[in-house]
Length: 288
Image (tube, rainbow, N blue to C red; front, side, top):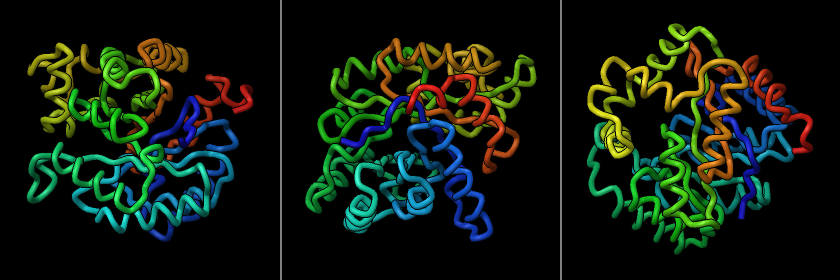
Protein backbone atom coordinates (compact mmCIF):
# COMPACT_ATOMS: atom_id res chain seq x y z
CA UNK A 1 0.00 0.00 0.00
CA UNK A 2 1.17 3.53 -0.77
CA UNK A 3 1.84 5.32 2.54
CA UNK A 4 0.54 8.88 2.21
CA UNK A 5 1.56 9.83 5.74
CA UNK A 6 -0.30 12.41 7.78
CA UNK A 7 -0.41 15.74 5.93
CA UNK A 8 -0.44 16.61 2.25
CA UNK A 9 -0.96 19.61 -0.03
CA UNK A 10 -3.64 19.81 -2.75
CA UNK A 11 -2.85 22.11 -5.67
CA UNK A 12 -4.25 23.20 -9.03
CA UNK A 13 -1.01 25.01 -9.84
CA UNK A 14 1.28 22.00 -9.60
CA UNK A 15 -0.64 20.42 -12.48
CA UNK A 16 0.16 22.77 -15.33
CA UNK A 17 0.84 21.98 -18.99
CA UNK A 18 2.51 25.33 -19.69
CA UNK A 19 6.22 24.67 -20.36
CA UNK A 20 7.03 28.05 -18.83
CA UNK A 21 5.70 26.79 -15.48
CA UNK A 22 7.83 23.64 -15.39
CA UNK A 23 10.73 25.14 -13.49
CA UNK A 24 8.61 26.66 -10.75
CA UNK A 25 6.60 23.45 -10.39
CA UNK A 26 9.73 21.43 -9.79
CA UNK A 27 11.12 24.01 -7.40
CA UNK A 28 7.86 24.25 -5.44
CA UNK A 29 7.50 20.47 -5.23
CA UNK A 30 11.02 20.09 -3.89
CA UNK A 31 10.30 22.77 -1.30
CA UNK A 32 7.09 21.05 -0.17
CA UNK A 33 9.12 17.92 0.46
CA UNK A 34 11.75 19.87 2.43
CA UNK A 35 8.98 21.51 4.46
CA UNK A 36 7.87 18.10 5.69
CA UNK A 37 4.69 17.43 3.75
CA UNK A 38 4.07 13.74 3.12
CA UNK A 39 2.06 13.93 -0.11
CA UNK A 40 1.25 16.23 -3.01
CA UNK A 41 -2.22 15.93 -4.57
CA UNK A 42 -2.52 17.30 -8.11
CA UNK A 43 -5.82 18.98 -8.94
CA UNK A 44 -7.40 20.08 -12.24
CA UNK A 45 -8.11 16.59 -13.63
CA UNK A 46 -4.54 15.33 -13.88
CA UNK A 47 -3.40 12.35 -15.86
CA UNK A 48 -0.73 9.97 -14.63
CA UNK A 49 1.97 11.81 -16.56
CA UNK A 50 1.26 15.06 -14.72
CA UNK A 51 2.75 13.38 -11.64
CA UNK A 52 6.08 12.68 -13.33
CA UNK A 53 7.71 16.13 -13.02
CA UNK A 54 6.74 16.30 -9.36
CA UNK A 55 8.05 12.80 -8.67
CA UNK A 56 11.30 13.58 -10.47
CA UNK A 57 11.77 16.78 -8.46
CA UNK A 58 11.39 14.94 -5.15
CA UNK A 59 12.74 11.80 -3.49
CA UNK A 60 10.36 10.94 -0.66
CA UNK A 61 6.97 12.59 -1.02
CA UNK A 62 4.00 10.64 -2.43
CA UNK A 63 2.32 12.17 -5.49
CA UNK A 64 -1.38 11.52 -6.12
CA UNK A 65 -3.83 12.42 -8.85
CA UNK A 66 -6.81 14.34 -7.47
CA UNK A 67 -8.79 13.42 -9.31
CA UNK A 68 -8.22 11.62 -12.61
CA UNK A 69 -11.51 11.83 -14.52
CA UNK A 70 -12.49 8.32 -15.65
CA UNK A 71 -14.48 9.72 -18.59
CA UNK A 72 -11.41 11.40 -20.10
CA UNK A 73 -8.67 8.81 -19.65
CA UNK A 74 -8.75 5.28 -21.08
CA UNK A 75 -8.35 2.63 -18.38
CA UNK A 76 -5.82 0.55 -20.31
CA UNK A 77 -3.65 3.59 -21.04
CA UNK A 78 -3.86 4.73 -17.42
CA UNK A 79 -2.86 1.26 -16.28
CA UNK A 80 0.16 1.21 -18.60
CA UNK A 81 1.34 4.60 -17.44
CA UNK A 82 0.69 3.66 -13.80
CA UNK A 83 2.88 0.59 -14.18
CA UNK A 84 5.71 2.60 -15.71
CA UNK A 85 5.56 5.47 -13.23
CA UNK A 86 5.27 3.17 -10.22
CA UNK A 87 8.25 1.15 -11.43
CA UNK A 88 10.33 4.31 -11.76
CA UNK A 89 9.20 5.65 -8.36
CA UNK A 90 8.28 2.64 -6.18
CA UNK A 91 5.74 3.33 -3.45
CA UNK A 92 5.39 7.00 -4.33
CA UNK A 93 2.52 7.23 -6.82
CA UNK A 94 -1.15 7.01 -5.85
CA UNK A 95 -3.86 6.88 -8.49
CA UNK A 96 -6.85 8.96 -7.43
CA UNK A 97 -9.96 8.36 -9.55
CA UNK A 98 -13.28 10.16 -9.84
CA UNK A 99 -16.47 10.07 -11.89
CA UNK A 100 -16.74 13.88 -12.26
CA UNK A 101 -20.14 15.57 -12.72
CA UNK A 102 -23.03 15.44 -15.15
CA UNK A 103 -22.72 19.09 -16.13
CA UNK A 104 -19.05 18.75 -17.00
CA UNK A 105 -18.93 15.54 -19.03
CA UNK A 106 -20.62 14.87 -22.36
CA UNK A 107 -22.41 11.54 -22.30
CA UNK A 108 -22.32 11.32 -18.53
CA UNK A 109 -24.30 8.34 -17.25
CA UNK A 110 -24.57 6.08 -14.21
CA UNK A 111 -21.32 7.14 -12.49
CA UNK A 112 -21.26 4.23 -10.05
CA UNK A 113 -21.56 1.65 -12.84
CA UNK A 114 -18.96 3.54 -14.87
CA UNK A 115 -16.53 3.46 -11.96
CA UNK A 116 -17.08 -0.27 -11.44
CA UNK A 117 -16.35 -0.90 -15.12
CA UNK A 118 -13.25 1.31 -14.97
CA UNK A 119 -11.94 -0.56 -11.92
CA UNK A 120 -12.57 -3.84 -13.75
CA UNK A 121 -10.38 -2.51 -16.54
CA UNK A 122 -7.59 -1.56 -14.13
CA UNK A 123 -7.81 -4.96 -12.46
CA UNK A 124 -7.46 -6.66 -15.83
CA UNK A 125 -4.27 -4.69 -16.47
CA UNK A 126 -2.78 -5.49 -13.06
CA UNK A 127 -3.13 -2.16 -11.22
CA UNK A 128 -3.11 -3.07 -7.52
CA UNK A 129 -6.11 -1.98 -5.48
CA UNK A 130 -3.65 -0.85 -2.82
CA UNK A 131 -2.34 1.85 -5.19
CA UNK A 132 -5.60 3.66 -5.95
CA UNK A 133 -8.22 5.69 -4.08
CA UNK A 134 -11.65 6.95 -5.11
CA UNK A 135 -13.21 10.39 -4.87
CA UNK A 136 -16.14 9.13 -2.82
CA UNK A 137 -18.92 11.09 -1.16
CA UNK A 138 -22.06 8.93 -1.01
CA UNK A 139 -22.45 5.57 0.72
CA UNK A 140 -22.24 3.44 -2.43
CA UNK A 141 -19.03 5.01 -3.71
CA UNK A 142 -17.52 4.86 -0.22
CA UNK A 143 -18.35 1.15 -0.06
CA UNK A 144 -16.70 0.73 -3.47
CA UNK A 145 -13.63 2.53 -2.11
CA UNK A 146 -13.54 -0.02 0.68
CA UNK A 147 -13.99 -3.04 -1.55
CA UNK A 148 -12.07 -2.09 -4.70
CA UNK A 149 -9.43 0.46 -3.60
CA UNK A 150 -7.08 1.45 -0.81
CA UNK A 151 -9.63 3.94 0.45
CA UNK A 152 -11.29 7.28 -0.24
CA UNK A 153 -10.35 10.88 -0.94
CA UNK A 154 -13.52 12.92 -0.29
CA UNK A 155 -13.60 16.54 -1.48
CA UNK A 156 -15.53 19.45 0.07
CA UNK A 157 -16.57 17.69 3.23
CA UNK A 158 -16.93 18.34 6.95
CA UNK A 159 -15.70 16.31 9.93
CA UNK A 160 -19.22 14.87 10.19
CA UNK A 161 -18.82 13.37 6.73
CA UNK A 162 -15.42 12.00 7.70
CA UNK A 163 -17.03 10.15 10.63
CA UNK A 164 -19.68 8.66 8.33
CA UNK A 165 -17.05 7.72 5.76
CA UNK A 166 -14.90 5.96 8.36
CA UNK A 167 -17.88 3.91 9.50
CA UNK A 168 -18.44 2.68 5.94
CA UNK A 169 -14.76 2.20 5.09
CA UNK A 170 -13.96 0.29 8.26
CA UNK A 171 -10.69 0.60 10.17
CA UNK A 172 -8.22 -0.54 7.54
CA UNK A 173 -8.81 1.73 4.56
CA UNK A 174 -7.18 5.10 3.89
CA UNK A 175 -9.40 8.12 4.49
CA UNK A 176 -7.85 11.33 3.14
CA UNK A 177 -10.35 14.21 3.13
CA UNK A 178 -9.50 17.44 1.35
CA UNK A 179 -9.56 20.40 3.77
CA UNK A 180 -9.89 23.93 2.40
CA UNK A 181 -7.75 26.57 4.12
CA UNK A 182 -7.91 30.36 4.15
CA UNK A 183 -5.10 31.90 6.20
CA UNK A 184 -6.88 35.14 7.05
CA UNK A 185 -8.19 36.14 10.48
CA UNK A 186 -10.63 38.74 9.15
CA UNK A 187 -14.02 36.94 9.05
CA UNK A 188 -15.56 38.97 6.24
CA UNK A 189 -12.51 38.79 4.01
CA UNK A 190 -11.82 35.11 4.74
CA UNK A 191 -15.39 34.07 3.98
CA UNK A 192 -15.35 36.13 0.80
CA UNK A 193 -12.25 34.25 -0.36
CA UNK A 194 -13.98 30.97 0.44
CA UNK A 195 -17.13 31.99 -1.45
CA UNK A 196 -15.11 32.90 -4.52
CA UNK A 197 -13.84 29.33 -4.54
CA UNK A 198 -17.02 27.52 -3.50
CA UNK A 199 -19.39 29.21 -5.95
CA UNK A 200 -18.80 26.71 -8.74
CA UNK A 201 -19.21 23.71 -6.44
CA UNK A 202 -22.56 25.01 -5.22
CA UNK A 203 -23.91 24.31 -8.74
CA UNK A 204 -22.82 20.65 -8.84
CA UNK A 205 -25.35 18.12 -7.50
CA UNK A 206 -22.72 15.62 -6.37
CA UNK A 207 -21.51 18.12 -3.80
CA UNK A 208 -24.80 19.75 -2.90
CA UNK A 209 -26.55 16.39 -2.46
CA UNK A 210 -23.80 15.29 -0.12
CA UNK A 211 -24.11 18.52 1.86
CA UNK A 212 -27.87 18.05 2.05
CA UNK A 213 -27.27 14.60 3.55
CA UNK A 214 -25.12 16.31 6.18
CA UNK A 215 -27.98 18.59 7.24
CA UNK A 216 -27.42 21.70 5.14
CA UNK A 217 -30.27 23.20 3.13
CA UNK A 218 -30.67 24.77 -0.29
CA UNK A 219 -30.41 28.18 1.39
CA UNK A 220 -26.84 27.32 2.42
CA UNK A 221 -25.79 27.09 -1.25
CA UNK A 222 -26.80 30.61 -2.30
CA UNK A 223 -24.18 33.20 -3.27
CA UNK A 224 -21.20 30.91 -2.79
CA UNK A 225 -22.24 29.45 0.54
CA UNK A 226 -23.70 30.57 3.84
CA UNK A 227 -21.55 31.46 6.81
CA UNK A 228 -22.68 28.20 8.41
CA UNK A 229 -21.48 26.14 5.45
CA UNK A 230 -18.21 27.98 5.07
CA UNK A 231 -17.41 27.75 8.77
CA UNK A 232 -18.04 24.00 8.68
CA UNK A 233 -16.19 23.17 5.45
CA UNK A 234 -13.33 25.70 5.42
CA UNK A 235 -10.57 26.17 7.96
CA UNK A 236 -10.19 29.95 7.99
CA UNK A 237 -8.21 32.06 10.43
CA UNK A 238 -4.70 31.45 11.70
CA UNK A 239 -2.70 28.23 11.72
CA UNK A 240 -4.29 27.25 15.01
CA UNK A 241 -7.69 27.26 13.28
CA UNK A 242 -6.28 24.91 10.67
CA UNK A 243 -4.84 22.70 13.40
CA UNK A 244 -8.28 22.46 15.02
CA UNK A 245 -9.94 21.49 11.72
CA UNK A 246 -7.32 18.83 11.06
CA UNK A 247 -7.83 17.51 14.59
CA UNK A 248 -11.59 17.38 14.08
CA UNK A 249 -11.18 15.28 10.94
CA UNK A 250 -8.64 13.02 12.61
CA UNK A 251 -10.87 12.54 15.64
CA UNK A 252 -13.61 11.56 13.16
CA UNK A 253 -11.39 8.93 11.56
CA UNK A 254 -9.18 10.59 8.93
CA UNK A 255 -5.71 9.16 8.37
CA UNK A 256 -4.38 11.95 6.19
CA UNK A 257 -5.28 15.64 5.90
CA UNK A 258 -5.10 17.09 2.38
CA UNK A 259 -4.76 20.87 2.70
CA UNK A 260 -5.87 23.12 -0.14
CA UNK A 261 -4.91 26.75 0.40
CA UNK A 262 -7.48 29.10 -1.15
CA UNK A 263 -6.22 32.38 -2.55
CA UNK A 264 -7.17 35.00 -5.12
CA UNK A 265 -5.36 33.04 -7.85
CA UNK A 266 -6.58 29.42 -7.73
CA UNK A 267 -4.04 28.33 -10.32
CA UNK A 268 -1.12 29.92 -8.49
CA UNK A 269 1.32 28.42 -6.02
CA UNK A 270 0.69 29.84 -2.51
CA UNK A 271 4.19 29.04 -1.34
CA UNK A 272 4.20 31.60 1.47
CA UNK A 273 1.10 29.99 2.98
CA UNK A 274 2.55 26.48 2.52
CA UNK A 275 5.61 27.59 4.50
CA UNK A 276 3.48 29.17 7.21
CA UNK A 277 1.40 26.02 7.58
CA UNK A 278 4.42 23.72 7.69
CA UNK A 279 6.08 25.83 10.39
CA UNK A 280 2.90 26.28 12.43
CA UNK A 281 1.99 22.59 12.24
CA UNK A 282 5.54 21.53 13.11
CA UNK A 283 5.96 19.41 9.99
CA UNK A 284 9.67 20.11 9.76
CA UNK A 285 10.17 18.92 13.34
CA UNK A 286 8.38 15.57 13.24
CA UNK A 287 10.85 13.64 11.13
CA UNK A 288 8.29 13.20 8.38
